[in-house]
Length: 81
Image 1 (tube, rainbow, N blue to C red):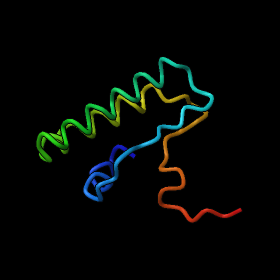
Image 2: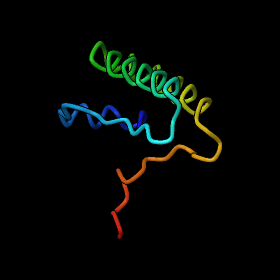
Image 3: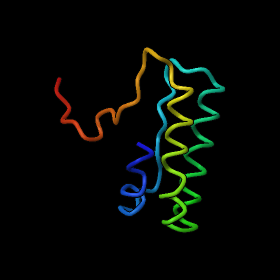
């Protein structure tokens, strides 16, 4: 969701939940740091955010477990039960 983070911030979302189920604490620490960098860059300057979001996405993708590929979860999908 780091690619769409600006849309969430434009919508004045007050908080984000990073799902850490089945992840190592070091993974969660890294992911949280990447999102903090992205949020800070966005509020510093939207141009800064656009410059670093691809780099942050690549860093997240590098530490993502192979069996759990990155996606947007249910953010853009209709929930079907």
